[in-house]
Image (cartoon, rainbow, N blue to C red):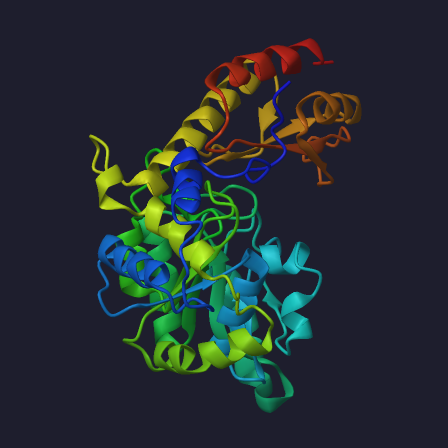
Length: 360
């Protein structure tokens, strides 16, 4: 039975794999200085509408977060982030190990809010040099628990940060899913227009690995990142000798020749399919009697289940049981279902039928 464990279990989307095979015997300059990386960066700049943006390819999401956060902040500063943000729960202290303290709010669902940040900001101002100074905002689109930010929410965060001269960084490991979520009004062009830096995730959207770290040169902090990033990338051990591999994959994903009838290049098409499968799965699970954590049109879906249901769902569908505070007080936990570019359409119906069969 098809597994709904994550969105990176499979290898690469066929068109991306074809591009890798086609260019396999080319001899390229190393460390991302090749023509494929250069063209991929140009395609990304054109797609986001920022011709002067800096684009750096790094192998994974945690390295991208390390590089973005350490280059956007001073040693005595840290990022404001939600309590359930990826760096706080899934990166094993990677940010702290690189000398930056995470300043976590009490916001739920991995969603950062201005109201949640205000107490941390007030404490920093009140205590001065005795407290880690906030230097930036960190949040992901989608959030760690599948929340999709609206344009109004994003602008509110950017405005709040601008008033306090803080940088804005958007972790885009699932940026494609967020931008292609049905009903969203927050586009990649708008994110690129306002954020100091963000990533376009490849690992979770049809590539073998890789993240594109995009930095804006229009702010002082952005220019500081662009200057420091090459040195920090090398120091962190993330300067990939065969950087051309990431260049080839992003080049294929953003190739204008792949645009469909909706005008979307392959990168967005892959996410649209994943989201559509996730929404269909969520609808079926709800019909089967499972309660969702929240309504979302991204490719991560979270549902409440009894311990017995969660164990059987995990065994049969590979989905991930998660400990959580059950508002019903009945001892349920969350189960995460994730779809990908490779999820077969018929696998969704099979999964719903299986989930129905184990419902207690």
